[in-house]
Image (cartoon, rainbow over all chains, first blue to last red; front, side, top):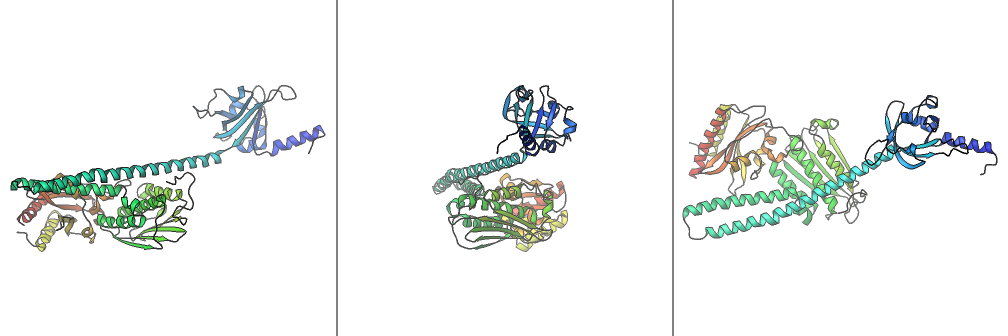
Amino acid sequence: MGFHMLDETAAFLETLFAHITDAILIVDAKGDVIGVNPAFERMTGWSGAELLGKKSLCELCRGMATCQEEASCIDCFASRLQTPSFQMHVVTKRGEEIAVAASSTRLPLEAGGQGALAVILRDTSDMQRIERERHQRQLTNYVIQAQEEERKRISRDLHDGIGQALYSIMVGLRVVNQLQIDEEIKHHLEEVQQLTARTMEEVKSLSVELRPSALDDLGLVAALRSYAKRFEQTFGILTHIEISGQRRRYHSTVETALYRICQEAMTNAAKYADTDQITLRFVDRADRVELEVEDAGIGFDPTQLQIRGTGLGLFGMRERVSLLGGTLTLTSAPQKGTKIHVEILVDEKGGPRYVHPTADRG
Amino acid sequence: MIRHQEQIQHALDDLRAQVAADFLALAIPEPDGQMRWQYASGNRNDRFKRIFLRPGKGIAGRVVSLGRPVAVEGMTPKAGDDPRDYPILLAEGLCCAVGVPVLRGERVHGVLLVANRSERIFADADVDALLGLAEQLGSVYSER
């Protein structure tokens, strides 16, 4: 389309000004407001009548965001001919401050521009929230990965380093104790042997508790079985295991996540459920794996999570699941026990079907 | 003289009545060396029997490695703490406990535990009574 007549152009520009989604604010050379469009009124809550000739730019603007500051007046955009992109803090009628994306242009003095400053604003808070969430998740993922790596390293060091050394000490003591020596010394040696054996056991269980090597060497199901057995012996809670579906290995991110979730859920049950029975179910349904931890304990009202602890454990479980695109459902009611159900979609190779873009595939 | 299992059980029941405590238990090693709570008085279920005591872990673990009485008061599960440090308290819903060593010669052979389900600070007299029984039990095990 073309504009043959001047007033047609003016009408078009008028419509554009009135309908465009971006908020437009125009101030004259002195800084007084001489024009706002409906989008600006919607964004700030001010009406044109309250602003035109009554307010100045500095009454509406709290400053622009720089690397150093949230809002600053140093190097103000109004002092420049053009500022293509910056973040500005606008004061709304209700006195709130909102951060918006902005660009500003100083119009020329000639051709009717009068040296006015046109500021175009766009509310990007949704985008920023999404960005923040993504960043947060990336960080969580990074923390989880780093923690797991660190645990694996310390667990290996304990097992292969200190564990092996203690074993050698024990063998050495046994050899010495077979020599012809005083009964009294023999007796002392036996004590030391027993102490060494106990320390060795302690180191071994410390290593397994940090991260069982079975999880890497034998896979999730084997690791769950030995965890359940250890759990039963630690707390005296009878633990039933039901495993169904094909047996296979899964991607290490899936195996680690499910193992940690199971550990957290069972630890919570031991701490809060006051139960003597737990059932652990693991099902491989080809396109998905499901893990369920159910206790017959005292239960609780899931809407009142903060009563017991901080709910941080549950938050961690949810975070691990969501990084793998899975779902976690918690079912509980007072005197009705508690059930945690986790489902993760997997491909034929046992990898997560959906991976959060920031999740490391390991 | 305490010799048979029933006598040990009676001794535990008597002491529990004497100090008016909710729970009393004795952990000693099984023939394979694994420490278990083998006797209890005032228990509400049999969970305690299934617990394997880990060296260095929990009240009993600390009594064994320190070789002296250990007390806990006002224990409730909290976010961030490790329940492996107090499995017997969880199993029996206890909050306050005192554990003392049962000595066999100079070595710690077992652990005698007195505990309550409600707030209580065990008095010196209670702990002395507990130590008295621990000594008797110690001499029994030393004879074997």
